Length: 80
Image (cartoon, rainbow, N blue to C red; front, top):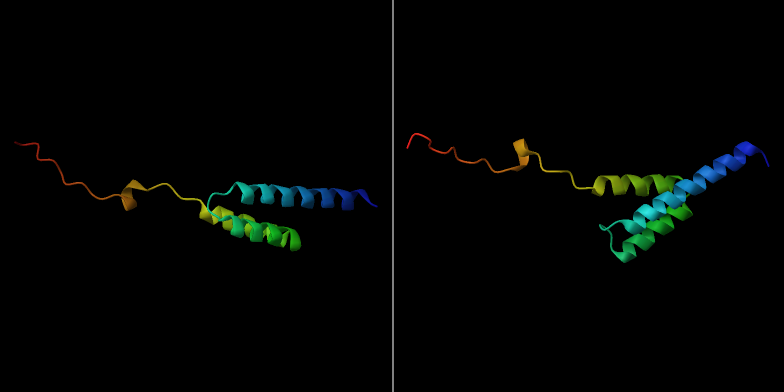
């Protein structure tokens, strides 16, 4: 076998394992959803892992933006 093929296969295997670990550690999926995600990752090589990783990336909660997500406070009356 050529070295290029072996390096490509090793890279694909590493990517699959990385995404599997990320799915297992995710707190946003139920155990049944995790099993389905892992099956998808391994039954559809590379594409399944890429889709699962993209889904994990969109699940992260973004921090609250003070200018958009907070309730405006009423100004304190300093003249009293």
